[in-house]
Length: 630
Image (tube, rainbow, N blue to C red; front, side, top):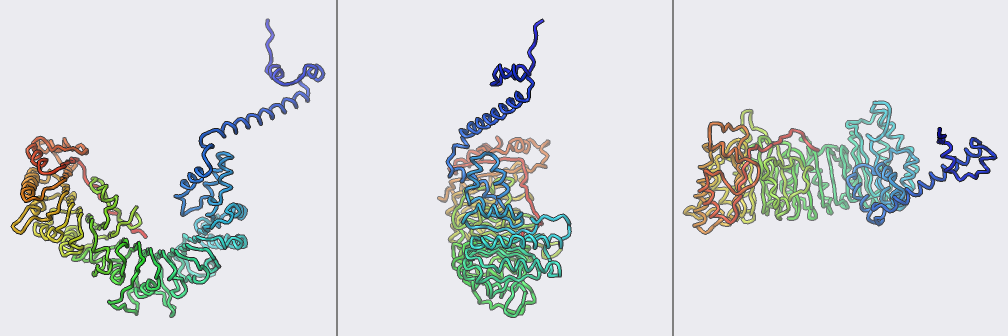
């Protein structure tokens, strides 16, 4: 029988061990074992070196340092409100090349959270070198074992006191300071008083390069005073505070964001009054951006504002406000803004249906030049909300025509806007009395306000409507079209409540007085063909005859679009014509009406340069949230 080799014998043959050593010490000696261990260590080091060499030639490790830094900056750009250090620490573990780049780039260590332990905080500050710092002291980040709010307040206080000596060395580098607490309604009792003193101490320190300060204290006993301690302060964001009017550098500020604030005047009054706000804005000679949320002035203020008072803000670029409709209108009534300013207003409710636009926007729009000069206007009305969206310039929003999508809904809240138009207004529609039809009444009111010349008649080029078109009578349409003769693009989208588009289409036909909207070149209509005797023939016939008359009058359209939305609850089983509509409701854009309307199809195509039809069996999704946003 052939003898088999043991695993140990094979291992010994692989080792660089001389034969005489085996003869002298034997295969099981301690010296041989030691040599085996040494060889294992040598091979492991060799393997680790080979791995590093292999990693070094991977594409991600051959990128220039500048490129990788840009990639990391992009990855951390969405972390503006939180610290990037935890993500950076994890990313450093990928490889030595990344670790070296990250640890040696001060840019990635400039946002620090004062709730970290002192050792890690000291490391971050050291790696930041001489770069400007953003300091976060967030109450909800303070770790504590007990659920008591008082316990967390004490730990918040102790957390700052433990790092205060270290921060003193870097105070000259602080450019951004963020302080937040998640405990609204705190009062200065024996426990939380030290907390208030800590906040005051942090804010009152001298910061020579501080440009941005964000404080959300929600502390009823804390009044804020910052003047000579931050000579370069330009942007403030305050929430839940009382502000000393005389002790803040208003004239230097370019950006102000205030939420649920009160003002402390020379007499110590803390009532949020319109007169105080106007006094503050009068001091803001450099202001470019203003955000004012939850503005609810006290009805008991003894100060009365002269109706002729006007505060000029010549550098204003963006104004965002939320609050009650009368309160917002009162503010804008006293402001004078440049034509380039962008205005976004969110009203909690509009109680009087006899005025919608003017209940929120100023009654004298001449003081806010951009309102009068709008060229592109979208008005959107649902059962509980109304939105106005307008621009002077034709931006990407207008070129995209995203409102034509069946599931489109405009942003209801100011902060949901990806790009602020030059005019944005959102309000909740409230009935005047219990049984009032606010939805219909409010939309009629908007049509009437437009007809009265709310926007400049010579400026408007694009008008887009969404709402209950069935309630707008021919007289209202005629007055509206007569008020804006220079319209080039007109889009009318009927809502889910049914429609009668014939009244609107007939008003586009020439009259003895002339052709309505003679500059009109693009028309888009959305309706439900099943609402018109089940087949849409009346609306289509009306459209064909109207366009024929306009063509004969020398006002031919360039583009015609039809968005025919068949209700999803339609029963087409016993109606072959309606069944064809439903069958064609594929949700894709085409150039064809159902075969029954072939003659109308050919007629419409001959009257315009471009004709598109979109047939879908869907219902516009309308989201009416009752949630308020700060």
